Image 1: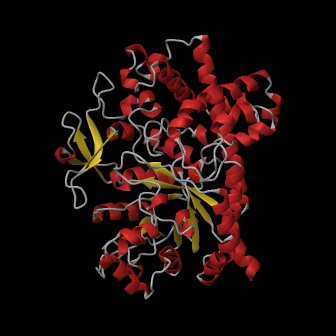
Image 2 (image 1 turned 45 degrees about the horizontal axis):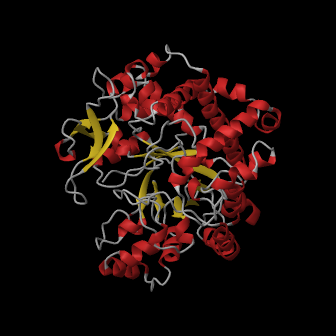
Image 3 (image 1 turned 180 degrees about the horizontal axis):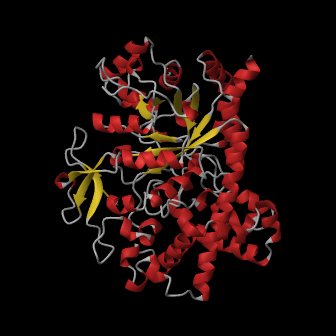
Length: 521
């Protein structure tokens, strides 16, 4: 067993608790959660209930499949999350123009409907802005300054979106050869209509980041830190790969990946998993001190206070599958950048505001890397009740350097898990905690709060005692993921009926934020 960290990073020094809720799952009038008033109302609920953290999935622009883990750019924001109400208030767009997006706040997200209607509304808003900039820039600042300050990632992303539209949404490797890389496309020039498309996407990023910065400031002022999420791999069809193909394992013709990511066969999947994400050419990254990666981390820390690194084991070793085989079973392990990468990361980010996702079949080598890098890992309480007293996720076995989740975005809700799992597992759960488990999600919360884990994170669905119908993502399921969202009345109910109780649990377990402790004392 690898020993726990000698010293935890600053952000994890105190006992605390947080809620996991993806931003798309917030209430909202316009078909999907947004980062405006409902997000601030949710932040108020967190502060009122004694939470110190809000965790969300990646907030980048999603593509086919609508997964926040497969985005068009690591640095861009998702325009779907823009709060249109703010733009109504400054008369950049009106209710009539937005009518097609308005839906009941409890309806699941219809991504197909958003895709069909969003771009026309965005274009109307941009054309109105282009005629009269004063009202928007009085609130959000200078659009020109935003473009200048963010040109390193914004220009490639907007160019990518221009050619994406021109090619009827084909992936970049199916574009004509003279625009198949960012460098070659820069010599092509833009038509007037292409320039408008470019500027529309820049405009949407300007709105997103202006609203996000307002939200983050509001959260921080109320004692709430935001935890984001960064997939280790980028999407194959993304501005990231299109702009810098030399950083990935591609052949000379470009667009033909030589090896891609996945995981080998294991107890859970006898065929393994073929993810298809391009793998990094780590030797090329090492030559310039992993600059692209350090800039990628930096872009996330402009959004979040802490960043969870998804699939952390890929820094130790990664499963490499030859594209020609398209069979996860035929892959093999390759060595990742290891501690060399994280030593440089610590120089760039001395406070190490990162959390390593180290779930699944993890080796001692991965744990040693995580500990040597100085990063906390993760534990999931739903995984603890297999009957083995040495299960690492049981409360009596938890190391102090793990963030404890009752469940993650890939898990069923706790109520859904409890009612669908084996009776043996349910029995182990009841016996371990000595409870009847009439309200399993609240039992989980109470017991998680009482563990030695410095930070405990609870999915919002568990506070609402929701079942499998509210599951956010089921890995491997082709349809129905990422669509759940909370209604306004559900947020009001849990705030009115449960906040005092939750805060009391935080107080008795020593999990109130420091500002709360000062008030109580």
